[in-house]
Length: 178
Image 1 (tube, rainbow, N blue to C red):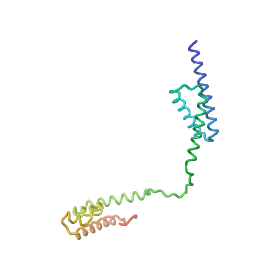
Image 2: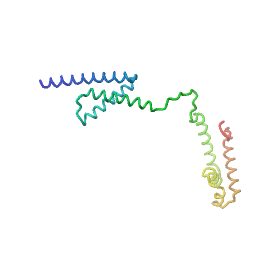
Image 3: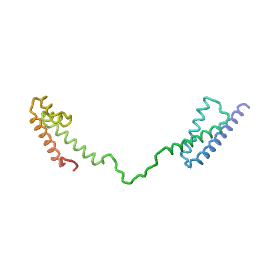
Image 4: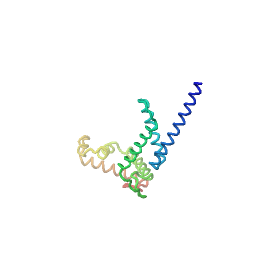
């Protein structure tokens, strides 16, 4: 008899839980007018119910759930009021990222320039990289390499000409996109 009584109690409890869940869902969606948001609030209500039950006894779970759900609905609308008004999106919003064809063009140019730098005489390459990429002043490069400022400038000019020529040999203008 004890086993049958326990089974009957579990069935009654499950039926009560289902009825409470349905009532909560109707209560919340009636206020929210959004079934998805309403279901999230019902779920959050049950999470809070189970968390609270671990710490304290709840005499009326239904009253507790409706109070929690009402507060969650109020919190939801409070958050919505705090948000700035939604701006209309224009159809012609420009993407800040480069287009795919631009990325491919840039990569192709970089490959060409890297190959040209590798074939450049070592002293010219070192001077160019220090001056143009590292930003070292010409006078410092000249002093480090025991050269004149004019010689450093000439190496930079020749390096730029080599790079420009490498791009032009492959049909790409030196200044930008083809």
